[in-house]
Structure formats: structure tokens, C-alpha cells
Length: 155
Image (tube, rainbow, N blue to C red; front, side, top):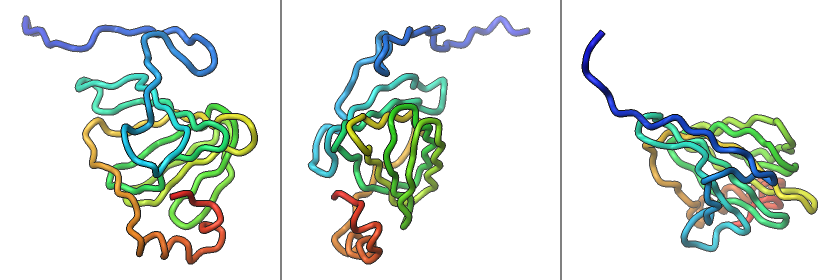
């Protein structure tokens, strides 16, 4: 056993305060600029250089929607509140509590709630990752060639 010490993050406990809110976890805007989303918040549950990933909670209010985007990194998602639909590539899927969604690299995706309840989901991503890519007008036209996708997407 070595006498060397390594710096790691301290142990953390954050109590759930109800309504998908946790101690010492601020509710932030989904993104700081843009009009390609509506009514979305995010919370960083855990992140840091020791982890290599970020565990986040997103909530989309009734009538809202996340960005229509793709990127080179993957997402692992679990729905934990409400129900809704998700676009994955060229297919719209219904989603509800405890459904799992894997978003591979460069896959178009967008989340929307259904009904009067918000849609909440946990999301794990790599700490180091690329920036999201929004569709160009040509890519948007390609996506809208599918009638089900055209009826769903908000961009």
C-alpha cells in the first residue's frame, strides 16, 4: 500500500425534497440561449472530473419540448416522471415512467410531454463531449419528409 494520497471528491448525500428537487441542486435553464426549445429545466445531480460522466435530471413542462439535435456522444435516459414521446432518428416512440432510451451517436432526438403533466428524465452523458448540432434547413426538410416526424418535431 502506498503512502501517496489522491484527491477525490468528498462523499455526497442530497435528500430528495419532493417534486423532483434535491438538496444543494439548483434548477437551471436548459440552455442559455436559443429558441429551439421551450419550457425545459436541468439539474446536475452528479458531475466532476473523478466521475467521467454527468448524471442530470431534465424536466419538460406541459406544452414544452427539448431541442431537436444530434451529437457524437451517447445519452442513456430513464423516464421518471410523466409520459410523452421521443423522436429517435426517424421514429416517434411513446414514453412513460421507467422506460429507457438509448441515444446513439449522431441520432436526431427530441423529447415532448403529453397531457398536463411535465415529462422528467434522468440522463447520463460523458463529462467530456461535443456540442449539440441543430438541423440545417436541408436536414430539417429530410426529417419532415416522414409525415409522423413532421407532425411531431418542433424546431
